Length: 65
Image (tube, rainbow, N blue to C red):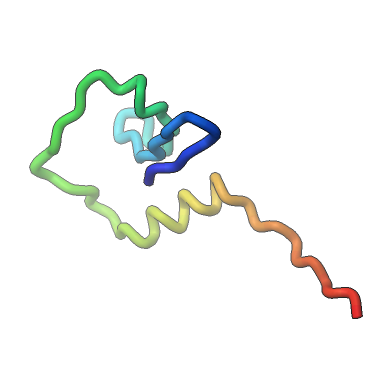
């Protein structure tokens, strides 16, 4: 997933080495490659875990009538 914060481009990615998500500045990546193997788990579950970690639920705001 790629996001923008002010003038920075950030990439959120799963780190196999540390077995957790990491957030990396795109301008700090010096080399990248495409691997033959893909993520072995369920992609939807991975995205759900990412959202639960980085996008906490906000309380609902009741409308004033």
